[in-house]
Image 1 (cartoon, rainbow, N blue to C red):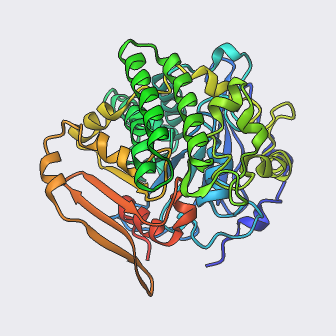
Image 2: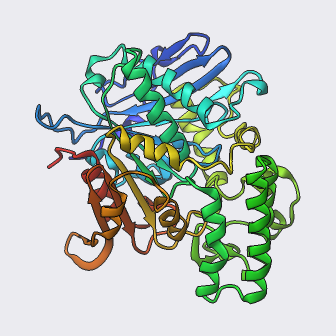
Length: 455
């Protein structure tokens, strides 16, 4: 089936103009009903943008309802409407060509620029930016209430929250917030599950993994290992003392030590150099001491894919902005750095306790991770998973893994194992952005996660 979004992207109508002064502003859908978008005012003067794609591959099956994926990007400050959509899993790539591996083959897609201040979402006063993951979850829950409670069609489809990087922290806090709202009768939807891709769930486990992993890979020497371990201990003490903003600063210092001792390894793929043609960080950026460049250059997706943010800006502030009728004074990604600063006190806070709560509530939880990621290294993921108190953990850890292949290619693409409502995928030859590096097996994986009835 041919994906129609390329033509639709250039469709315009005066009826599509949305007023952000309303509590919820929804543009009329495209002529064939394949897309809808708009703003939700989640708090006074705080506006969250969403974009919903209805899959052209939809299969109507009463036994297996067609799923919806809510994609949450990381950062903090990374735009799901821009990065997740046009770079990773949406119907079109950044050059507006159809994507053969779009996740629309398995589900509808709902992209949200979260938290407010990210992407097209904006606040009218910087004081309205969220400062904790729980505040972000509250805003997202408000958005879901506005979208789902008035739409019985959406209510029939199970919602799967799929996150990447820092988005994993949003996903688990939203999952718990949504469950409470559903139980209280405030939210009408069925939560299908939560999937955590290369997620920043336990920052300390990740920073503690970097130097040992790179030492085993011959990327740093004993001197670099010793210096790194000293900073890791500083971070541990700061976190224990509740000095979370100070721990965020030490995290940035540790990254600089790692760079200096590894000849600038790429934090999104330890098989690459950050300064190579395949990276995008510059020497000027590396030497910058401003808070924005020092803290937010890693998880905002700007280095893993060459020039990503800058390359997307013309698209997102041009034809896409025109199509979506975004207010003229809203510039895509303009407030993103402020979002990171606002959340710097929660940045190093672990959220794997929330994974325990989701598992104990019976929610399907999936963890997937790229083999060559450094920032959220699999070594760190396995460390926090082993800290879970979930009663099924011992059995899960003792189980064997099953290899995964893709199409006619008999090379091993991934390993997976599941026990009850917990699932883990080890994706080989993939860095931080798994759908980009391994689109085929990732599409199979997302079909498994959503139990999609797609043929």
